[in-house]
Length: 161
Image (cartoon, rainbow, N blue to C red; front, side, top):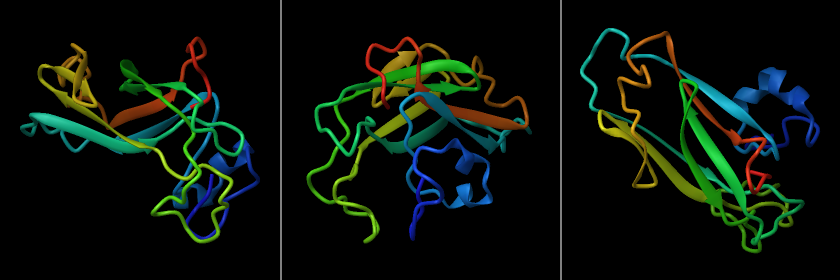
């Protein structure tokens, strides 16, 4: 995990996830497991909601970088699996546009933009319907938070996301 000015801990150490510095993360990498973000549920008061969206940049995780390193990456909303995509590689070889000056050239440089939209009709990952579970089935209006989890399943064909 690294921030804008420096690494936030020792590479590949899970201890940084328990550090106060984790809130400054701008890049996170892992080969297995998941990250979970919990957003305050601002819709709990039954406000009108027609669509909820998430967007993020992601790629595979390989030593240094490897443009041909597929990974199957899955997303869950409130504990329900809704979208799996295959990342083609851990992209490098040309400097990422937003990388800080201190970020090593030999490391991953960029990812691909992914989007998830949830409507009353279901979930749409990168523009394609990936689940029939919609806003109601995913309990978007219930609970104190909305859980967005991204990770690599243990039984994925290609691990290392």
